[in-house]
Image (cartoon, rainbow, N blue to C red):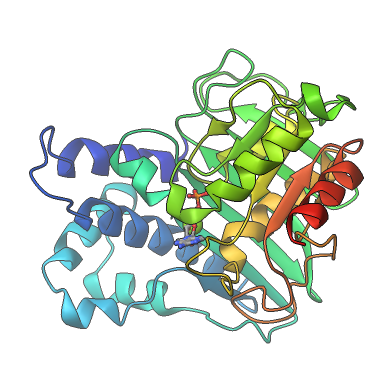
Length: 308
Ligand code: AMP
Ligand code: MG
């Protein structure tokens, strides 16, 4: 079992109460920081010149001291000699989107899914000269090709692949579907209504005459299903109450390389290329549309109709 999935599963077992009385986000915070620390440590050891842009920053510990010992305990399960100071330094390493090469990390993407014991992933990408050239999406809960967990990975111009965690077999190449009729498409959308625009998605389904219900799923696991050809269109649209919402790069960069290397298309809602040169958010893009090769233009056409 890969290191990050060991951490997230152990935190779920040790810190999520079976009947949690009120929403307690501390398990996800512990897992986030612990995974980020071990990945930052590896990156520092192997690529000391590179930057890292990740969701968490160590400044949090000043206001939440009770979390830190639990984070250190998790990291020590992986690297027993680790000190508290090292954990803080690893978490604070990087944060430089101006670097020519930087890594982008969402240690636990799909935090609500993690707490509900549904889908979440650990997502990592490498950006060189504003281009995403590598991605790895670890999926501890994803049922794909008869495996219950595994990781998807892709490198620019080298394709996209799935590797199960628990079986030593050659990686399976990922290829998007060839469904070319909108009415036959399977849609993917966020599990949380507040992370997308439910109304627009419902109108899209109606105009496209799609009969099957969208798959609602947390995290970038959605894009792994798209890359594997298990679904055909992913719509991610700003909610009505946040029309100016711009995506964080750690929520899109890992998916971007994967989907494109699997033969799919991924743009914003107007068909513009995603611009990874604008810092930690995609300031030049609004909404995310990811599809197989055949359905992108038709999908954008309907969205254009809906925005008039
Ligand atoms: P999903 O797994 O599709 O629900 O997307 C999860 C990501 O959505 C999180 O990592 C957040 O960065 C992002 N997010 C959080 N709040 C919002 C929001 N109000 N609208 C859109 N995305 C959000
Ligand atoms: Mg995320």
